[in-house]
Image (cartoon, rainbow, N blue to C red; front, side, top):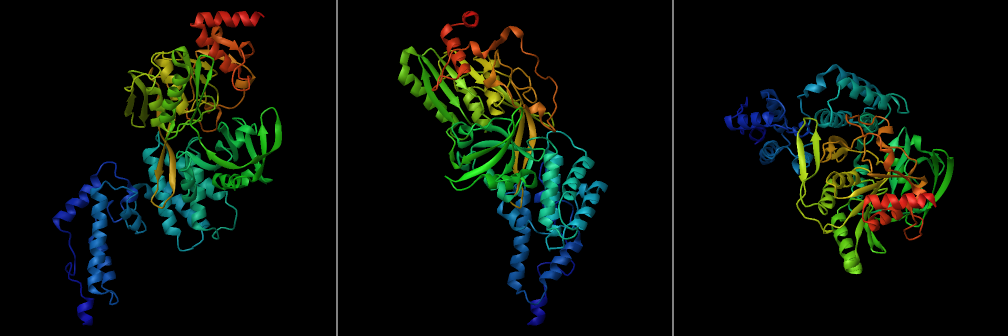
Length: 554
């Protein structure tokens, strides 16, 4: 019985690979675009017989019953075949189940001197906690993804140098730091060195990131990013605790509850800022021209209301605060409500995109499409020059009524797509100041250990062919004043992507002073909105400029 239990008859004593398995293996290797990280079961190179012998010797052990031996081998092969035939989806259950399988075949980039240099330093710094090999595979997965998918080609030595910089900044004796902490530091440093919007998210941060586009989360209500070790506010969301506390785009959070942000990761700082609704958080703000000051903000459940509306006389005002899953439907409801209230008296619409940091691409396309009958809205170009275009087809829900779009330095990304598309098609007059200039596409790429990369993979181009990246959208009518001044733009950020065709200077004849605008809004303090309403009531740009000159002379 013992001899029978130790024997293994699925293959012969020296196993060979049948023709069908060999063909599938070769199909997997040659499959275009198949991510290496899912080639766990020796699918990245032609298999050697010795590796099957290792598997055979392993399952020959007396303590494994023969039926279980057969099950294990069949399941292992099935996992490999499944990954090959389904296109190697890294998020599949099988990829996760077998994600820890140690492939004896190194990827090509793992044999380069730069990678070996990182591996040597990593082995010196990380403690031998039983996870060092697994964590190194995690780094290799992310490293390969960046090399293959980033919007620009990257030099290996640049990436590895950035990763090593992150490792060397860790505090603690060499050889005593947990391997997961070392790899996280390496990935943080490597990815954030690419541009202001690429980042590595550990599993906890990845889960947190998914609440924003769903429309409800807890906290202060600010869009943030990490700049030179500090938290920079990209934009406070309208009608949130941060907005009511007076926080502005370009403000830096230097301390949370008295602790310096520079000693925290971005994820750690976010967790410190969030807390029980109704509780207070004390932060220190550094603002250009105002120095540092402390602010106490009461946390709240942030329910992102993507669209708000009201009327100013016979003008409808639609404020789009964020592009989330509900934005398009909320826009249509807002326009319907404005029509129901004003009826035939409706003379035009103001689309307010100020301080809107962006959001989902498909929602920005849908909102631009809502006011266009035909033509291109935006195109996306990746590193290979491949173009994906988005065309208008829904029709104009405003029925041809004149539109003014309001933008400022806090209008970014998806907001710029909408403003730029309507401007290029001459469907709207854009008013305010030059927008932020974020024209890059970030892809959230889940990794097979539940973390993710937020990686810049393409650039946006407007219908006219001009780029948003680093340029932004220039208004047709530039309105200069205190409410629109201050704050950094994309081109001012460290590591900002450079592109050709930067925006030119605004024509002097189109620059207006905000002080000449009438008051508008709920509190009668919104000068720019007042100018937009006056523009629509005046009937033409010439009439509007004449009215502005008349007000200026008063």
